[in-house]
Amino acid sequence: MSSFGPEAYADEAKERWGETDAYAESARRTGLHTPDDWQQVSSEANDVNQALLALMDAGIPADSADAAELVDAHRAHITKWFYTCSPEIHAGLGAMYVADERFRSYINRAADGLAEYLSAAIAARYGSGPTVD
Image (cartoon, rainbow, N blue to C red; front, side, top):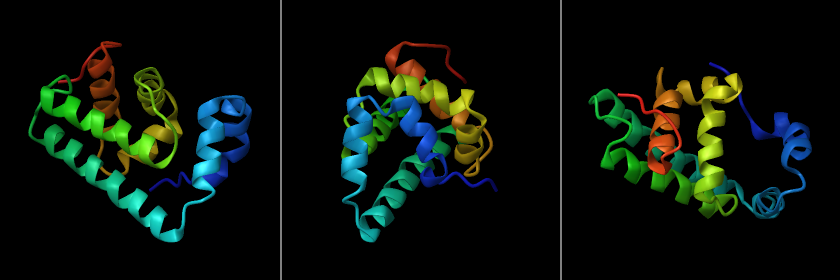
């Protein structure tokens, strides 16, 4: 199982996104999170991942209405805990989830193919790319 803690990539994140409003908002908000908050963040993220896995395992296409609903829940989770996640930002994250091996490995630790399914569902939700059946 790969490890992907945000603290390990703090310098890289600051270099890549440090000048953005989203980065500043995330740094401010996460600095206020308590250990209980982080537990809730993890629990809520796991709930979304498990629901996506259920769709994937059932053979529900990534461009389905059910998957779109979970994409919306995924984006709402990011907005709730980190920064305002616009559809444009979310589409970029979806692409990064498969383009960056660290993200892909981390997401796929729940199940092989989850990163690709999530990425395809995000792309389908915003009309920004191919879908995975």
